[in-house]
Every structure is written in structure tokens, then in C-alpha cells.
Image (cartoon, helix red, strand yellow):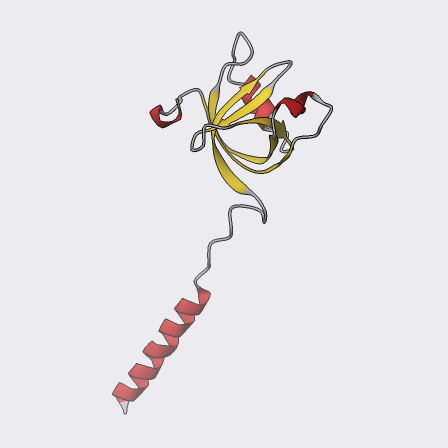
Length: 123
């Protein structure tokens, strides 16, 4: 009788602990992807070069953090590339404005990492 009781108590405890296990939340918003590459910022250009495809994109900062964090790195001149990892989505560049020189625009929604240290795989 005691062994059956012990079995049921153990089974209930295991099921209880398993049921309480929290699942990690998705880190990206629906429709966004994590991009890794080089970002350059200056008065006339905001560009992103994807490390995996070596393609260039116009970059916009809907997070209001990318340009701020770039400026906080303390560069003395514009257009110095930095390595970034961001959440975002690609859209077709609008015709008739400065972004039209690029076929796609990367809309940054969240900055995950920004550093002056550029990995060898991204040069």
C-alpha cells in the first residue's frame, strides 16, 4: 500500500513540475528576422551590408536606438562601419527619395548588438 501511495505522490509531483515549466518566449516579432552585418551612418547615407549575402540595403531605424547607439560610440567622422545584429524586415525601397539607390530597405525594429569590432567573416 505504501509503495502505491509513494508512486502516486511521485507521479503527481513530476507532472506538476513538468506542467509549470515555462517555455521561452519568441525573441522576434512576427515578420521580423535577425540580420547581422555592417552599418554605416552619416548625413547622406544610412546603409547596411548583410554579412551572409554581401548585399547592401538602405537602413531605417524604427527602433530609435540604432542611430543613437551608433553616435554613442564616439566616432570623429561619419560613415565608419560597425558590426550590428538587429531584428528587422526588408521592404522595397521607395522610389523618388534617397533610398531609391538601393532596391531594398532594412527597417530595424530592435537593436540586439552594436560594436566597433568587426568579425573576420564580415569583411
